Image 1 (cartoon, rainbow, N blue to C red):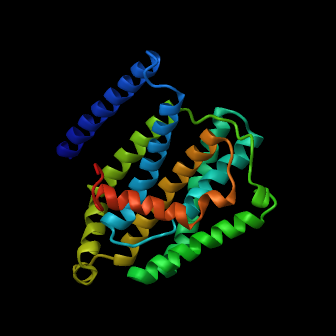
Image 2: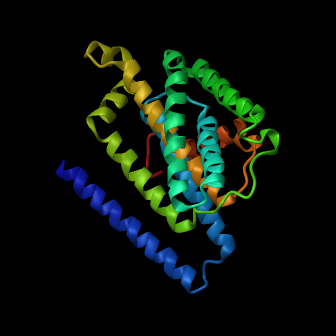
Length: 255
């Protein structure tokens, strides 16, 4: 417990220092709007990649469905903030997107997480495409045209803070009892089950946690860019996030 508290304080200090540094560089004009947009894109991708890394790197489940959960969060924010154009509506939309993504992850995860390897990747990819096609055909989502003029409540400080919170939450989840159970399933699910660990339960827990962070990333994406369309959340988006996880090091949050 003390070790976790100390690690959290160290990371919190680094994150506060990073915020002060970026704010100072922006105030002096060294960071212009182009660099700020790049930093925002990095922040959103960190939110998405840490959740996917939990599924792939720590739980050992090869998922290609992250873009679908991202789409749920993005459209929840797009729809709700157009009706409630206030910070309250923005945070409410994030909560709604997370809840819907968790429900979708449970529905998808219960049957698919019994699969392994390529079969699981194909199943999750198919589930993500189903989500995209449903969004593409709903009237409330404006179909293929997407949603425009979404109120921008996700500024770079908001995205930076959300990125820090999700990263710390993910790190604490990994170093908790639940995280150790998930990593034991990754190492050898047969041995873990023999030790009394419910492998399906912990695989699903990692999948649901990752889906929730993807929805948060999708909400940030929608609010910052102010425009979304079903084509933004295709299979190539999931593959791009997978590349980030692999290049950073599967099972490494710092990577």
